[in-house]
Image (cartoon, rainbow over all chains, first blue to last red):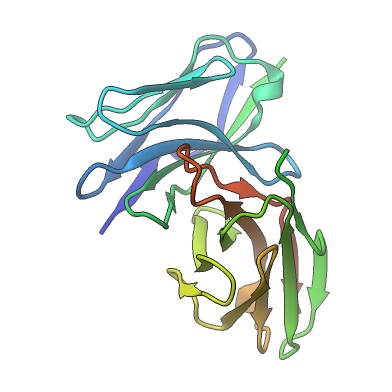
Length: 111
Length: 114
Protein backbone atom coordinates (compact mmCIF):
# COMPACT_ATOMS: atom_id res chain seq x y z
CA UNK A 1 0.00 0.00 0.00
CA UNK A 2 0.89 3.67 -0.02
CA UNK A 3 3.53 4.68 2.50
CA UNK A 4 6.10 7.27 3.45
CA UNK A 5 9.54 6.60 4.89
CA UNK A 6 11.62 9.37 6.38
CA UNK A 7 14.97 9.38 8.09
CA UNK A 8 15.06 8.57 11.76
CA UNK A 9 15.87 11.32 14.16
CA UNK A 10 16.85 13.07 16.16
CA UNK A 11 18.98 15.23 13.91
CA UNK A 12 21.22 17.71 15.71
CA UNK A 13 23.00 20.46 13.81
CA UNK A 14 24.81 23.67 14.57
CA UNK A 15 23.30 26.97 13.55
CA UNK A 16 23.98 27.89 9.88
CA UNK A 17 24.61 24.25 8.93
CA UNK A 18 23.09 22.70 5.81
CA UNK A 19 20.06 20.51 6.43
CA UNK A 20 18.76 17.50 4.56
CA UNK A 21 15.94 15.32 5.83
CA UNK A 22 15.34 12.36 3.54
CA UNK A 23 11.88 11.22 2.53
CA UNK A 24 10.90 8.47 0.10
CA UNK A 25 7.46 7.25 -0.75
CA UNK A 26 5.56 4.33 -2.24
CA UNK A 27 2.36 5.10 -4.09
CA UNK A 28 0.41 4.25 -7.19
CA UNK A 29 -0.45 7.10 -9.49
CA UNK A 30 0.66 10.65 -8.87
CA UNK A 31 0.18 11.69 -5.27
CA UNK A 32 0.69 15.17 -3.89
CA UNK A 33 3.64 15.43 -1.49
CA UNK A 34 3.94 17.62 1.61
CA UNK A 35 6.21 18.62 4.42
CA UNK A 36 4.52 19.58 7.68
CA UNK A 37 6.30 21.06 10.70
CA UNK A 38 5.36 20.79 14.37
CA UNK A 39 6.93 23.35 16.70
CA UNK A 40 7.10 22.53 20.41
CA UNK A 41 3.67 22.58 22.04
CA UNK A 42 1.83 23.24 18.79
CA UNK A 43 -0.13 21.37 16.16
CA UNK A 44 1.20 20.63 12.69
CA UNK A 45 1.52 23.36 10.08
CA UNK A 46 1.94 22.95 6.35
CA UNK A 47 5.51 23.92 5.41
CA UNK A 48 5.50 23.24 1.66
CA UNK A 49 3.98 21.01 -0.98
CA UNK A 50 4.41 19.76 -4.53
CA UNK A 51 1.75 18.25 -6.73
CA UNK A 52 3.61 16.79 -9.72
CA UNK A 53 6.96 15.48 -10.82
CA UNK A 54 9.81 18.02 -10.83
CA UNK A 55 7.75 20.55 -8.87
CA UNK A 56 9.72 22.35 -6.18
CA UNK A 57 7.94 23.44 -3.03
CA UNK A 58 9.57 26.18 -0.98
CA UNK A 59 8.83 28.20 2.14
CA UNK A 60 10.85 29.92 4.89
CA UNK A 61 14.11 28.95 3.20
CA UNK A 62 13.16 25.26 3.02
CA UNK A 63 12.90 23.47 -0.32
CA UNK A 64 11.88 20.04 -1.55
CA UNK A 65 11.69 18.70 -5.10
CA UNK A 66 9.25 16.01 -6.22
CA UNK A 67 11.46 13.34 -7.81
CA UNK A 68 9.37 10.67 -9.43
CA UNK A 69 12.33 8.69 -10.74
CA UNK A 70 13.69 8.19 -7.21
CA UNK A 71 10.28 8.45 -5.46
CA UNK A 72 11.76 11.04 -3.11
CA UNK A 73 10.88 14.42 -1.62
CA UNK A 74 13.89 15.37 0.48
CA UNK A 75 13.69 18.52 2.60
CA UNK A 76 16.65 20.91 2.43
CA UNK A 77 17.68 24.23 3.91
CA UNK A 78 20.94 25.99 3.26
CA UNK A 79 21.45 27.59 6.67
CA UNK A 80 19.38 26.47 9.66
CA UNK A 81 18.48 28.62 12.65
CA UNK A 82 17.70 27.75 16.25
CA UNK A 83 14.07 28.63 15.51
CA UNK A 84 13.92 25.75 13.01
CA UNK A 85 14.05 23.24 15.87
CA UNK A 86 10.88 21.19 15.48
CA UNK A 87 9.55 17.86 14.30
CA UNK A 88 9.22 17.55 10.52
CA UNK A 89 6.73 15.21 8.86
CA UNK A 90 6.81 14.11 5.25
CA UNK A 91 3.38 13.20 3.89
CA UNK A 92 1.67 12.09 0.72
CA UNK A 93 -1.90 12.41 -0.48
CA UNK A 94 -2.78 9.54 -2.79
CA UNK A 95 -6.51 10.13 -2.88
CA UNK A 96 -9.11 12.81 -2.48
CA UNK A 97 -9.33 12.54 1.25
CA UNK A 98 -6.51 10.79 3.04
CA UNK A 99 -3.04 12.06 3.85
CA UNK A 100 -0.44 9.52 4.91
CA UNK A 101 2.22 10.85 7.26
CA UNK A 102 5.73 9.63 7.89
CA UNK A 103 6.94 8.95 11.41
CA UNK A 104 8.48 12.39 11.85
CA UNK A 105 12.07 13.60 12.26
CA UNK A 106 13.01 15.67 15.29
CA UNK A 107 15.47 18.45 14.44
CA UNK A 108 17.48 20.26 17.10
CA UNK A 109 19.68 23.24 16.25
CA UNK A 110 22.51 24.25 18.56
CA UNK A 111 23.32 27.97 18.83
CA UNK B 1 -6.54 32.87 9.98
CA UNK B 2 -7.99 29.44 10.31
CA UNK B 3 -8.41 28.41 13.89
CA UNK B 4 -8.82 24.85 15.07
CA UNK B 5 -9.34 24.46 18.79
CA UNK B 6 -9.44 21.35 20.93
CA UNK B 7 -11.30 21.23 24.21
CA UNK B 8 -8.37 20.19 26.40
CA UNK B 9 -4.58 20.28 26.14
CA UNK B 10 -4.12 17.60 28.79
CA UNK B 11 -6.51 14.94 30.04
CA UNK B 12 -6.15 12.14 32.57
CA UNK B 13 -8.76 9.39 32.62
CA UNK B 14 -9.15 5.95 34.17
CA UNK B 15 -9.48 2.67 32.34
CA UNK B 16 -13.07 2.02 31.35
CA UNK B 17 -14.16 5.65 31.41
CA UNK B 18 -15.98 7.18 28.44
CA UNK B 19 -13.91 10.02 27.03
CA UNK B 20 -15.00 12.85 24.75
CA UNK B 21 -12.49 14.91 22.79
CA UNK B 22 -13.94 17.96 21.10
CA UNK B 23 -12.65 19.84 18.09
CA UNK B 24 -14.03 23.08 16.69
CA UNK B 25 -12.98 24.95 13.55
CA UNK B 26 -14.12 28.43 12.60
CA UNK B 27 -13.62 28.45 8.82
CA UNK B 28 -16.65 26.52 7.60
CA UNK B 29 -14.49 23.63 6.43
CA UNK B 30 -16.27 20.57 5.13
CA UNK B 31 -13.59 18.01 5.96
CA UNK B 32 -12.41 17.21 9.48
CA UNK B 33 -9.99 14.58 10.75
CA UNK B 34 -8.86 12.90 13.96
CA UNK B 35 -5.33 11.52 14.25
CA UNK B 36 -3.30 10.05 17.03
CA UNK B 37 0.41 10.78 17.25
CA UNK B 38 2.76 8.29 18.85
CA UNK B 39 6.57 8.31 18.99
CA UNK B 40 8.10 6.51 16.02
CA UNK B 41 4.71 6.01 14.37
CA UNK B 42 3.94 9.52 13.19
CA UNK B 43 0.30 10.43 12.70
CA UNK B 44 -2.27 7.74 12.14
CA UNK B 45 -5.76 8.54 10.92
CA UNK B 46 -8.56 7.39 13.22
CA UNK B 47 -11.67 8.81 11.55
CA UNK B 48 -12.55 11.56 9.14
CA UNK B 49 -15.69 13.34 8.05
CA UNK B 50 -16.54 14.81 4.67
CA UNK B 51 -19.44 16.84 5.96
CA UNK B 52 -22.10 17.05 8.63
CA UNK B 53 -23.35 13.63 9.77
CA UNK B 54 -20.88 11.90 7.47
CA UNK B 55 -17.99 9.84 8.77
CA UNK B 56 -15.49 7.35 7.46
CA UNK B 57 -13.08 5.03 9.22
CA UNK B 58 -9.43 5.77 8.93
CA UNK B 59 -6.58 3.35 9.50
CA UNK B 60 -7.08 2.66 13.22
CA UNK B 61 -10.76 3.15 14.14
CA UNK B 62 -11.00 0.31 16.66
CA UNK B 63 -12.01 1.51 20.11
CA UNK B 64 -13.13 4.92 18.81
CA UNK B 65 -16.26 6.51 17.45
CA UNK B 66 -17.00 10.00 16.18
CA UNK B 67 -19.85 12.47 15.92
CA UNK B 68 -20.35 15.35 13.48
CA UNK B 69 -23.72 16.93 14.26
CA UNK B 70 -22.62 20.45 13.30
CA UNK B 71 -20.23 21.51 10.59
CA UNK B 72 -17.82 23.25 12.93
CA UNK B 73 -17.56 20.47 15.51
CA UNK B 74 -16.07 16.99 15.25
CA UNK B 75 -16.02 14.87 18.38
CA UNK B 76 -13.90 11.81 19.08
CA UNK B 77 -15.30 9.34 21.58
CA UNK B 78 -13.48 6.62 23.44
CA UNK B 79 -16.33 4.36 24.56
CA UNK B 80 -14.24 2.59 27.20
CA UNK B 81 -10.77 4.02 27.55
CA UNK B 82 -7.83 1.65 27.72
CA UNK B 83 -4.19 2.25 28.57
CA UNK B 84 -3.13 1.66 24.96
CA UNK B 85 -5.15 4.74 24.01
CA UNK B 86 -2.71 6.94 25.91
CA UNK B 87 -1.50 9.24 23.16
CA UNK B 88 -1.51 12.70 21.63
CA UNK B 89 -4.72 13.32 19.68
CA UNK B 90 -4.70 15.84 16.86
CA UNK B 91 -7.71 17.26 15.08
CA UNK B 92 -7.47 18.85 11.63
CA UNK B 93 -9.79 20.48 9.14
CA UNK B 94 -9.63 21.26 5.45
CA UNK B 95 -11.75 23.00 2.87
CA UNK B 96 -12.78 20.71 0.03
CA UNK B 97 -12.41 23.75 -2.27
CA UNK B 98 -8.82 24.53 -1.32
CA UNK B 99 -6.53 23.80 -4.28
CA UNK B 100 -3.57 23.68 -1.89
CA UNK B 101 -5.23 20.80 0.00
CA UNK B 102 -3.92 22.21 3.27
CA UNK B 103 -4.94 20.58 6.51
CA UNK B 104 -5.09 22.92 9.51
CA UNK B 105 -4.30 21.33 12.83
CA UNK B 106 -5.34 22.04 16.38
CA UNK B 107 -2.75 22.13 19.20
CA UNK B 108 -3.49 18.57 20.27
CA UNK B 109 -4.85 16.86 23.37
CA UNK B 110 -2.44 14.73 25.35
CA UNK B 111 -4.49 11.91 26.91
CA UNK B 112 -3.21 9.70 29.70
CA UNK B 113 -5.28 6.63 30.57
CA UNK B 114 -4.41 5.10 33.94
